[in-house]
Length: 147
Image 1 (cartoon, one colour):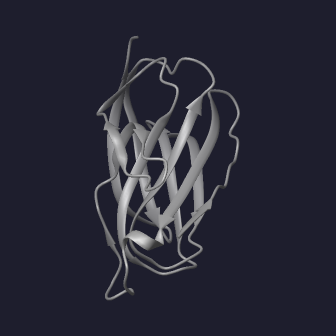
Image 2: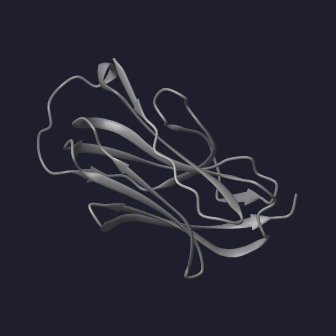
């Protein structure tokens, strides 16, 4: 059994924004036992379309990248919780993706991604924060390199 919820928003200029959330209930049987647990946020150019687990992990993106994915493995997350993926360059927020969790997550990947509409400016100082109910649970930095 798989449930997919897609929530999108647009922040003008650089990116057309998209986000995705998937939970594959059938592959992790059981019930929530304990407090929520969060892995490290992983950057990728591709994720598995069903599980949302990163397929092609990266530490930097090319300027002409088609999709920039950030995914985090989570455990023991209750329905009604909220994740936010905050994409930034320095202090400037480029995109903010909010995902409201529709079902209990025993062990799942949660993913937010952006699709740039033009080349991303080359440089350092980019980051992604993952927030759970308004608290940062994982962050990472990355660079954008020439094509």
